[in-house]
Image (tube, rainbow, N blue to C red):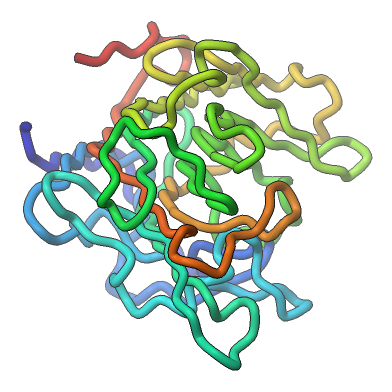
Length: 309
């Protein structure tokens, strides 16, 4: 397997803000002064060696809303010590979610989860592809076995961390999410804010494309962002499009202007969309990532569908 990281510095900007893998609309730790934010920085990561490339990725952190609560997907990060649930091994990035009993502690102290996000942000003129698979247990079960962990909530997604606007005013693009109720489905979803202030989700619904598939085998999730259009693919097949006029009830279209961070995480549901996890080792699982690639594309022209060897 070819292993390399290539950086193409396209546009560099410095910002002063507070971010982390966050509660939508809240803030997190201050970015270290030495870190420079860049937009549309092309790269490929094949996850060679034994350590993650910290010039590309940083850890997700738990955040808290004004009500003191954390969002579903990042509510266990405070329980996780550093990089213990994120490792590079055998040519893969492995993100772990596991039961970690803590007698006498509250419900949100019984599990640990792993997640990373890119230091850089991405918008029009980029294509991202992520090859990933879901594995039950602590990586002992072989790839290809059916994945069905109660409460699991893995995701590959774009989100503008640190936004002060109410979710999902600045958008959210889910290249892949998984929930217990549909174990053979990859949820490909694009979010926006309706004119009445409520949230709006547009989801792929194609049998044999994102439905009726084995999530424990490798799939490649791709997102193209060009002017006035976002396109999602799975394994090179177009599954979903989103434009300023489709759906027609958008308050505004964020994807021409708001640049997004790429987030990879293995988390747990809380019962709002799918059931929460059991307090048992049977809840343990991992998301393996073979590679991630972000390339430049013409922001004014719809590209051809991606192809993979």
